[in-house]
Image (tube, rainbow, N blue to C red; front, side, top):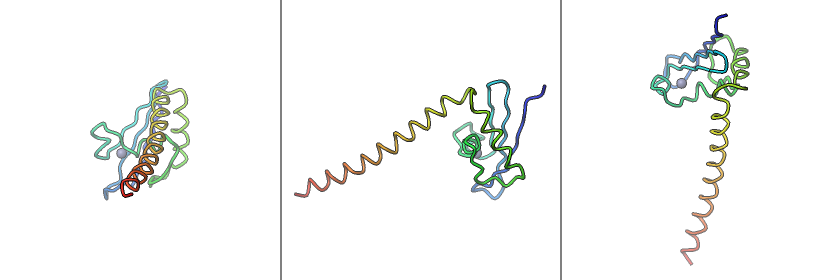
Length: 112
Ligand SMILES: [Zn+2]
């Protein structure tokens, strides 16, 4: 049995759309993107969005395949780290909001 493969064309900041490919072997998800970050093996939002079921920017005619790729997450090798990543991003937002408030309070307190 061949491993499933899906390719999406995503319009990013470059005039040439990026190719975002997903394949799965057992619980192992592989995802590749032709954007500069993706080519360097760094975080790129194009792969994460699709894994999240978000079809933003996709210009290829296979939007329904986004659901299939997103459904691969459950039980995959990247499910837990991505879950943790989302938790940390949420914590970071809370910390940033609290920090902004306390900076304003301290700045105000220093003026009286
Ligand atoms: Zn990318």
